[in-house]
Image 1 (spheres, rainbow, N blue to C red):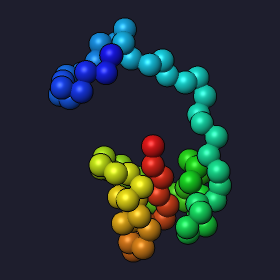
Image 2: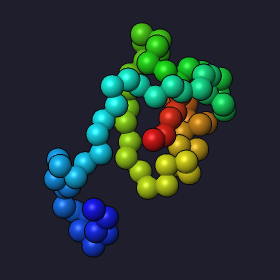
Image 3: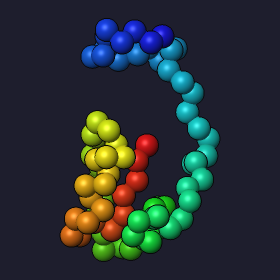
Length: 74
């Protein structure tokens, strides 16, 4: 299951972990900026999704970026 030598190979569906039927509960509001983390964002905002290495370190880069309303990792 954990063959770290095959990073570019997609796992087979039979080996994948099952998904969830409901969303994970998230603490509100955002610890740093006080804005919501959940799906109820103000209507004028757009969503941007980034895939980065060390996600907590990368998330921190956006905390003081103008125009960023909220950040989340996972």
